[in-house]
Image 1 (cartoon, rainbow over the protein chains, first blue to last red):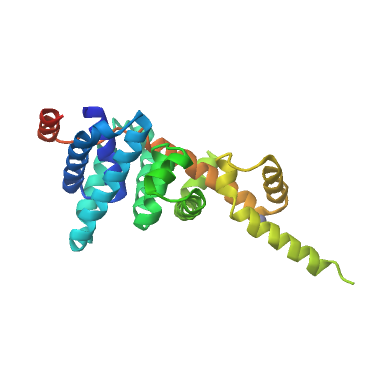
Image 2 (cartoon, helix red, strand yellow; image 1 turned 120 degrees about the horizontal axis):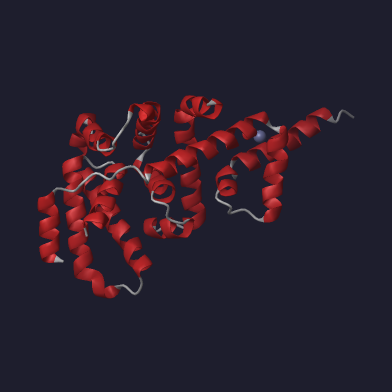
Length: 166
Length: 85
Ligand SMILES: [Zn+2]
């Protein structure tokens, strides 16, 4: 339970929800999931649905409180809390910089591009699964994913150069 | 007639085609034939070759985010969920 909730919490934060709201979203998503659990045949169908509910909840929250989302500060705190909890020896400092820059680049994407990238590239869903979560046809999903990746790549170019030479 | 402009046009067509398919290439979602087409072009196009390498690096780093320590939902929230579960 704790593991599933924390996993979904990380995803919802990356979708762009500020920390406090992300907890609410996780809670609402699980409560809905519990109510509907009889409708699902397999585990994969259930998780597809769980992510979809989380996306809808996240979007609903963000529309409702669009103005507050503009306050990047709380958003920053929620995202950085992911890295902050890492046991980070000095050796990993450079890598932490890269990770922080990467999180910023992901967060800078518009929602419709950020979600495909989070689901496919961070959460590791297959193209078919992630497209199903978003209720998009695969070609439409792939085209958004490609554009999202290109944007993140561009933001990360300098960091990647350093990495490649190392 | 001069073959230059025609070659250039073919090159640019391959460039646009490849550029749009680099993600599919990295995801292993192209046919064998299309994979070869991408490889053929990236061998002679510095821009696509660099794009491919940095895109590959970006994906590797994004995958790494999955293994970052998870943030924790507050204990109270978990308690409430356990009760309703
Ligand atoms: Zn090219």
